[in-house]
Image (tube, rainbow, N blue to C red; front, side, top):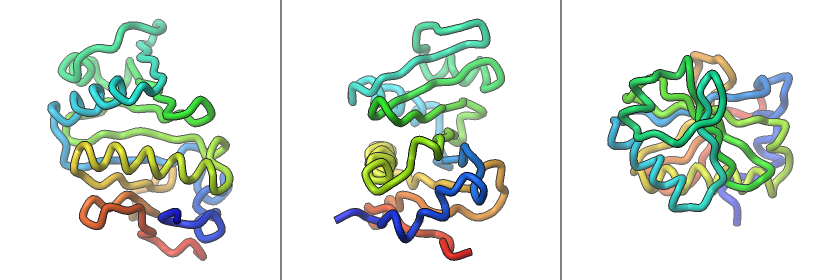
Length: 158
C-alpha cells in the first residue's frame, strides 16, 4: 500500500496552488552527504546529466560541485524516464532540488516520486521535505527518516 494516496495530496500537485517546481530539501547535510548522493545516483542506474552554464560535462566530485556553486551548474536526475529532479549545489549544508509537477500527476507517478525520496532519505539517513515553490513556509510532505515513510506535513485541504 502506498504511503499517501493521490486523492489525499493532489492539491499539493496542482500547478496553480504549488507552482510548477516545488522545492525539495534535505537539511543538515555535508560535503560527504553530497558525495554519498552522487554515488547513489550512479549505483542506482538512474539517468543523469551534469550541466554547466555552457553545456553538459562530466559529473564532478561533491567537493568540486559545491565549489562551483549552484549559479553555474545543475544535476538533472531521472529515476524513471518520465520524471526529472534538478539538483543545485547552493551549499554543503543542504541538498536542494526541484521536481516538475507536470510530470507528477496520478498515483503511479506519485509512488515513483516517493520511492525516490525514500531511497535518498534512507541512504543519507535524513528526512526529505517538499515545500511549495519559492516558499519559506513549512513543508507540505516528506519522507520522515524516523518512521521510514512519506507523511503529510500540512493540511492538503488548504
